[in-house]
Length: 415
Image (cartoon, rainbow, N blue to C red; front, top):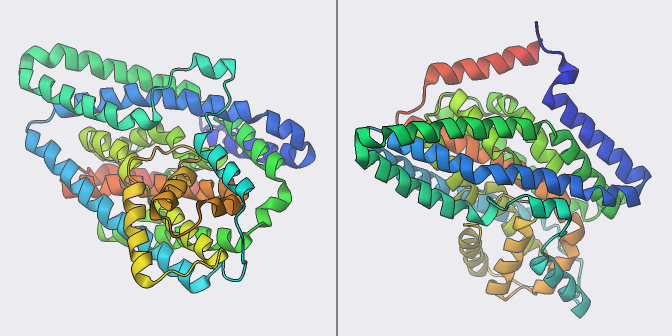
């Protein structure tokens, strides 16, 4: 018997987002108090990421017939990341220079603005008791976990048959962790409700239109990147980015509600394997992509910096803008896919670049939350496409499974 639409996670997350929007508008105070729901959900998902990546990468590497396959997948992924991230930065640079959303504002940063920026940079978040219970196993620890997992996998591979019992045990633990993720995802609607209620309650419905031109430029740039650049890349490699977006629509709704790409990392790994990408490729590309392939964050940093230069009447030559682009590319590496990381990267970039007053970032603090949603959505889609592309380059993509997964999604949409 087909599952009822209203019982699906897709529908429940939509309800959570809508309810959060209403609460934020009708009772702003209550909306701000619901922020712990979002914090708890994000913390719960983040807690599972480290063990999940460890188990997936270890079993994937240990089960490979040749270590050359691992090196090939990692090398091709890094090449892809650099090329596509550069395209994302370039597109953002071109559009913000053509539209010039900050031109004419004549904004003058004050000492109070600098205090607000420092508050964002050094904020440690709410120290609520429930959050203290949940261990911090993801975020900035991600690359360390990946390194340990790769070394552990190599060591198990060298042991051969003697290491097989341990490999099998780790694989079983990985299946249990996926089960835990499934349980956590059942409360995703509450996380989405809390995040949306807090955002609208704190900044107000009118804040959605504040600095609207910058937001419109950024969202438009992300759409151009996804349905232009990524669509072309996907088409060249034999699949449709439109069908792929439909395939991961539940995950994208969770990202939309929480403004965090990290909340769907476990589910993305599971879905990409179901779509035909091999476990080793998924285990390597997705975690690395969360640090080295943040396309949405790259676009945001470039556009945000140039916007602030325009808003503060800071002249920037073409050479300076190219230098900023290169710096933004370096600064965006190693960022965790969590809410607010893009803003911190922008602050760090301007502190290093120095030509644009850092205190001017106070101008966009109010709308950063809304822009973070587009950042996170673009990051998730970009990493999903990257995984399928690298899997095909490595000849580790089951085309029949990919076609079947996307075709099933299309059939479900047409019902």
